[in-house]
Length: 282
Image 1 (cartoon, one colour):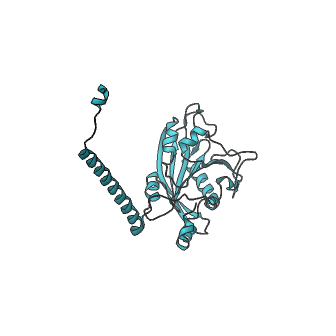
Image 2 (image 1 turned 45 degrees about the vertical axis):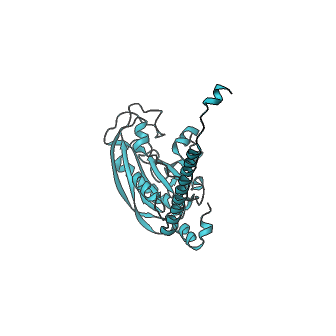
Image 3 (image 1 turned 90 degrees about the vertical axis):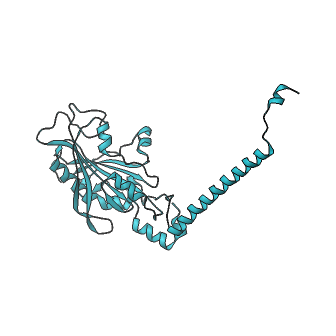
């Protein structure tokens, strides 16, 4: 008999039974935990795993003419690199330029960029200028929340919506690393900045704060969950008054068509109540 055979350890029958009992107990506890979670979801109507919420239409179908705002002739939607898309956390996005045809060509605030990011189910931290633009080297000088009154919606209602309004300093000489903000250079004078504003549609409601997005997305009794950032970047340097005028004008013209692409939350919930089984399908 070899030395290796003599020194090979073997568990005693008692130890083997103890190990088996431990495994069985652990399996039983795990099974009970799963049953408890399933029971809680059924009894309390808590939804842990959200069902993917499909867009009504692809974002690129949003019209290129929205009231007095039109995409310049020959302009194409901006495409992001694979790396940026991975960082963004979604392939559902739209980056498109619009020009106000009623305002003088090249006048402050006459050109904007619409930036929509849509997350159909798996919540991702929204990418907002507070983080991205500062990361690109811009200095944020002002940030506040404003309310835009008299905004029409796809359902015919007119309401007020909240918007986070941000102003950044104009970089000396501009920077190629900045997010396509137009041709800007020199330090701001006369109260001019690079301005942008954003709001989020979360499960059919509008909020301006990324923290609110997370809170609303995880509503316990909602089977579906989505969020969309709607951002309006004012291209070129403008005063805050000029930028606000542009953002308000654009959103009032564009929001009904944007909402026709995003999920119809009321219709979705009505379908879920009438046809629970069918509503689980994406």
